[in-house]
Image (cartoon, rainbow, N blue to C red; front, side, top):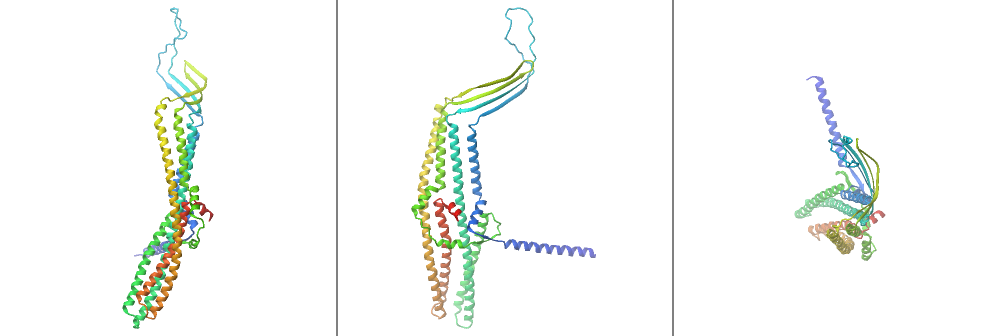
Length: 457
C-alpha cells in the first residue's frame, strides 16, 4: 500500500470523526434546549398556532365574502353580448314596396348575404325586489357577526385549554421535584440504616423495608418523569415549539391562586348573560333567520327594475343598425310563487323557532355552567386551605415519628408511613394550587370575560 493511499484513508477517518463529534455536539445542544415560558406568553403562542382558530378565521372570511356578495346584489347588472356568424346563401323574399300592378317589369336582384354580426349591451337597475335584497344583506350581516362571535368563543376555549395544559405541566414538574427530593432522602435513610444494621443496632428487616421504600420512590419518580415528558411535548405541540424544547414555567403565577375573587355568583351570572359569545352568536343567528323569513316572503311580490340597452348589427350588402338605444321599465312577477312559496315560508319560520328554542337552552346552560364553575372555584380554595393544614400536620407527624424511631419508640413502618403521608400532603397542595388557577379561569370563561381578564394582566 503506497503512502498516498494511507494518507487518504487517514484523512477520511479524521474527517468522519470530526463530523461525528460535530453532530453529537449539535444533538446535545438540541436536547438541552430550554425556554422560559410565562402563562401569558403560552396563551399568546397557542392563539397564534391554533389550528381551530385558523379554521374560525377562514369561516369569518367566508361570511364577510357572502356579506359583500349580498351588498353587490343592489348594484346594476350590465351585460354585453356579441357574435359574428357565417351563413349559407339564404333565400330572401322581401314583401316591402312590392309592385302589385301585375306588371312584368324586372325587379332588383337580392343582395348576397354570407355573414352577419351583432352586438348588444343591456343595463338593469333594481328598484324593488320584494325587499329580498335588503333582507339578504341583513341576513348576511348577522351571519358575519355570528361567525366572528363563534371565533371569539373558540379563542376563549383555546385560552382555557392552554391554561389547563400549563397547570398540568406545573403539576408534572412539581411531582418530579418532590419525588427527587424523596428519593434523595430515602437514599440517605438507607445509608443510615445500613450503617446501623452493620453495627447491630437495626434489624435486617427494617433495612429491607427502607430499601423497598426507596425502590418504590424510584418507580414513582420514573412515572413522574414520563408524565413530565408527555406534558412538555403536549405543551410544545400546542405552542408550535420544537418537540425537544424543555419548558421552564413561571411558578409565581400559581402563588396568586391563594387570592379569592370577591365577586359573588350573582355577579358572575349577570356578566355571563352580557358577555357569553355563544348567546350573542345565537342572537345573531336569530336576526339572520328573521331576515330570511322576510326575504322568502318577498318572492311573492313583483320585481321592478329600470332597464336600458344598446344594439348594433351589420349584415354585409343588406342591413346596418347603429345607435339603437333603448330605455324603459321592466316588471317581473312569478304568479306561481303565490302557491309555491308557502312551504318555503313555513321552513324559514321553523328555522327561526328552532333558533329561539336553542336560545332558551343556552340560557339554562349558562346558569348551570356559572353555578358549577363557581362552586368548583370555591371548592379548590377550600382544598388548598385544608392541604396547608395537612402539610403542617404531616411534617409535625413525621418529626415526632422520627424522634420516636430514633429512640426506639416507633417502628420503621411507622416512620415510612409518616414519610409517605408527608409526601402526599405536599403533592396535594401543589396540585391544588394548579387546579385553583384552572378553576378560576374556567369561571371567567363561564362568565364570558376570560379574554378581557387575560388582556388586563
